[in-house]
Length: 292
Image (tube, one colour):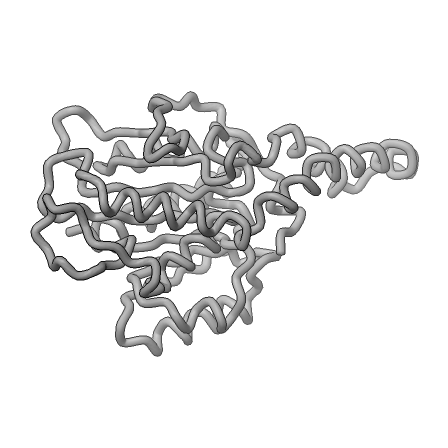
């Protein structure tokens, strides 16, 4: 389930530098490394509720690209991403205010938020969007690589809503596997859709049901004060992943960080910025290791 923290936070003051194109029938924001750099692989950023055209998600994609990756940030919600207009009213709803504001203002703000949240919940739950996500990755795996390589590496980086889909990909369900494009020199047998996964403050996760089946190397970043995945649950995740012999893992708990810390920070808050930078470094290091 989603929580109020899924729809609150700050908005980046930076400007995205990538481009919008259509990839396998899906609108996709593309961030590329410098022209002289051959990408280490593709990272598909599976976003939070605010979707592919959120400036926060696009700027984060740019950051990954500057570290040597080709980054795709696709519209996996089919145009139904959460409107950024809910951020301000939700922040006000969660603040302590005067009795006048509470009685006469917050009620209208609550209705405004519901106007956006209810349609999003009805159209974008993981069960309704999973097929679309899987098809996108299957198309990536079976198509010619977008740059010269004999072993295309594909990673999924999921945040909040996208974390659930990333964990699903990391389970490597045999029925999702496909045969790579003929230009690849590996096995001709069906293979996993991704080579590595990173999740930050994922939602909709069930412990242990979503953790036991994981087979793909996965790195996990969660805030110490996350309302979605509290201390006992993340400790269970650590124990379950540590017990596995068939999947590398990395679990980091970020002190003082709340849900959404990796992508929706307030730029003026130095502690939030530091937490987001730590998650970014964790993701980049993980993919660099797994793609090498």
